Length: 427
Image (cartoon, rainbow, N blue to C red):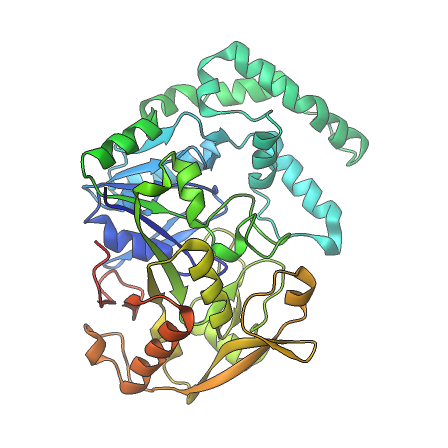
């Protein structure tokens, strides 16, 4: 049962799309198991760049079946826009499967997300405003709309009415907005039913049967470990579980079937949105990382906050995910620095702390403790083996591996599909 989980080991944007795409030719199914179109992946194939927001990266691999699992929240308009864009570029999207139990991001979820975030003012979370949080809240509150509900108009109408009872009170009396009409929402949602139907499946059954047949299934997380609703820097987190455990609940596959858990690490650190970030840089080094690394959010379009590599976070990701391997990305971005700082611990109230503090207050006040590693000036984008890297680059990778607590099995030395050094096979 070769089931692999691939996830972000920092705050997201680590390069999961490239890693998934590289494995896509060797796997039978690629499964998104949480999040929605608030997560973005950029995949470069030859001279073509693809920005994926909701669809699994495996959709670009012809022999692979892409799956949107039950743990994902789906905005149908975004889904079809993305499918249309790929179809126009000659990508076959007909093999896509979508869980009938996945929840739908409704128009009122998007409205509530935007007005709530605006209302918070300086206390805002940094949400993308795409309705993801309110949709997960509806799911937990048992007033959510699932894809399967589109095929029973009576049930759909009842559920929309139940959801809007409270939301319209909030919109009209707190936010001074117009009430949303039930019939209008039902009509819009029903408009997606026929086009969605060919993709809808019992994906839990499909995936478990695939594993029983020794098919290779790759579970692809969105966002990153530090954005996990339970294990991230709460409240500055997403509304789902990007950590490895989320693959089990978000796809309906038991933990004993997972054979490998791969964490994607950027050779430095970035974050989008609000929240603590101990190694964040506000100087020309931070601007250089942003410029050279092209650090702009695929989905949000926002500039990413940039900082040096944080080994404390990497160790935490190893622990909470049970990581077996790391894929280190964007090593080439660090070319040209004479010295490269690496955060090995924090200082909190004068005390050295080597593990991530569980207290939000402590983490907010954490100051990075740096060690300085020698840099390199050689172009590494053509390197095909670890031995091709300059010695200082090799030493940097080895140091990060030792500090992070799991072997680095692959290294990204450029954005292209073929600009990767594979040290140990993931399969």
